[in-house]
Amino acid sequence: MKFTQKTPKADITIQGQKYQVPQPYAPEHVCTEAEAKALNGLIAENARNNFARRLKKINEENGKLAEGVEPQPMPSQAELDDYLKSYEIGARKIAVQLSPLDKEKKRLASEMLTTALRAKGRQKKDLTTEAVEGLLQQILTKYEATIHTQAESNIALRSQMGEIELD
Image 1 (spheres, rainbow, N blue to C red):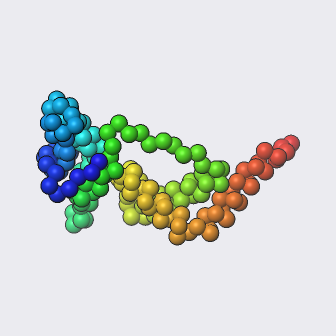
Image 2 (cartoon, rainbow, N blue to C red):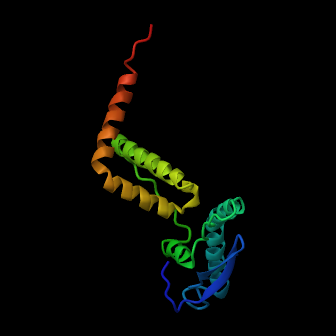
Image 3 (cartoon, one colour):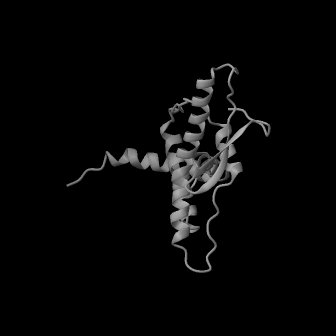
């Protein structure tokens, strides 16, 4: 979906936090007035649903903080805008078939990300899918040689497991 600063916006509330979502559909602009209302409502509803779990988790965690601990900030309007820029009504992401080596490399990077987030008291589910994918890509790039070597080793070890003879 494309939108600019001039695109009309609607205010929505997600878990008590106020945001604005673009409303690019207008009557007589490729669709009828009813279709425009339905499409704009769908955008707002999907934005609300897709951000609600994240905000609920932040609210819960902030409610359990010890005195003097800085609360985790709520996602900004810019983060919602970034999500909506890649949003397409009705679009489904198609899974790409990965080789066993690529699957293992991604699994290792995911494990590294989980460990790094835990060290900071966070979890992957606190992040958007886009943020997790971006961080995984950074890890895969930064530690490419190490991850590749470990992935090959893990695959070789797994293939030998079936050959183990037990008494």
